[in-house]
Image 1: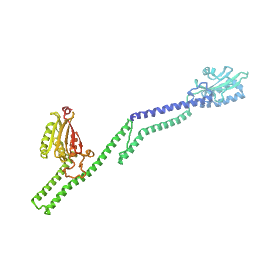
Image 2: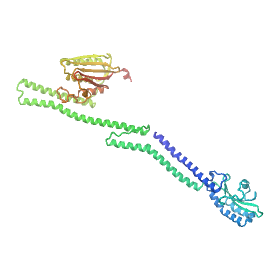
Image 3: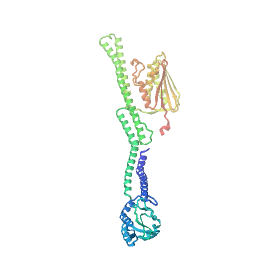
Image 4: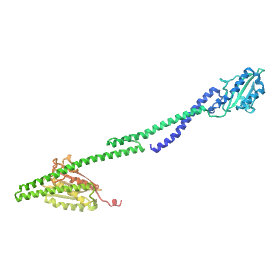
Length: 494
């Protein structure tokens, strides 16, 4: 769920939930108050208008009149037949929003309010029908009248009843206000708890887990995984964390690998330089000690020293070149190259050298004569020379053979260069493009190799957007394959 949606739900919950719960509380409290009022006042009809202070408060203000008339009815009932006395009592009642009505049998004997009497007279309780609590009276909610009844006997034996009728105004009950206050406080607390738990589980808990994950990252632990199926911001944040974790893990592993390779590089350079230096030192000492005591020995010693110096120079040049392309300090000069013409020139360049070494060179081009690629001619030629040079070193047959084939791969061209050398073991085949890797365990330079020729080849091919691999059989030979995309006019227009 998106944060925007959660905010909308939270906003609506803050407004609607308290309103709904308050309404429920009002109905529940009202029902209790109505029920209690019904039991106390003996309502003829009941509704929520009884949730006011009028019944309790207005009943109390006429208590003195009620008790006075009740005492008169018991001790001097004849005075209740005196209309002057009744008028005086009615004046007191009038001050308290009430009036007096005296009934004799079924007729009105005295009324302090003729108009109101006409409306309520027929609904007054019968003689002798006093409420459980005579001081409570009867309440008529449709007319908002509270009626207190006192029965007595007229002097002629007729049934008489004195009614104190009070108009009840709508005043909100203090009890209701108190109950509603506590109910609203409880409702707000419940709403806060519900929203807090929801927000905590949906926002703060995931953020806390992310915080723990970031602490693991800071401590170098890249194995702490965070997964989420959510499509909201938290889920996106978790996925971004996972991308970052994987990138950092990959970067760290690459850094560790580079450090290991750099250590190997230093070790390999030391080894490869130490061998010719030791040889040069030995031959120089031989000359100094007079071991080369003939012109022939002297010439052989000097020639050996010269060759070892060339080996060192070649190694240093290859290291410098590899360092340059590895750090992108050697710029590429890409051009549109005709495949047939370019490889024909390469074959002619290496043909004479192979012929002098008694190595047979076979060349076949199976692509369209107009096929072109985007490449740096100088760097691509270095690829061909390095591969063929590597093949020459490891040809162990009396008659060496090298084949160059250019194949059509629809959108790309594939170049295959194979030989009939001693081949490469399957366990070594995946490592031949690594820096300073040699298949012989002794890692000597007797064959004239530095161990970085194929790593240079791989780097150049990948910088051209292609890829390279090798296949080999021990005792039969090795084949290097690399693929480069064709150049198309549509691609240039795009």
